Image (cartoon, rainbow, N blue to C red; front, side):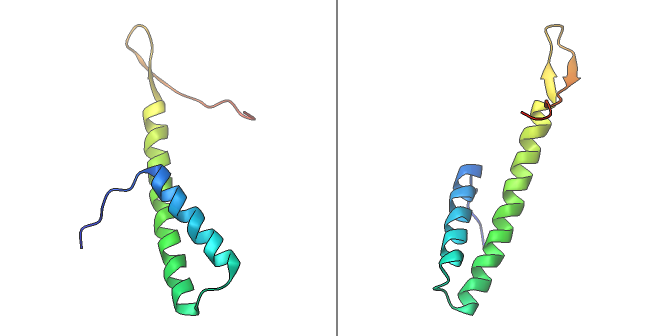
Length: 76
């Protein structure tokens, strides 16, 4: 089965909806398990997308075209 590419924002929105639905507690056990499984898939997808974005940011190009590692400031 072919899956459509989902953006980070779409995945987060779907994940938030799943969390809200599960928190309400009006879902059967079977549906809850399916939603939980989908939530895990979405979480992995988001983690992969964030890691890819971090890798891109880690290669900041200086004026002399040298690639230097990007380090996030702690506490911000």
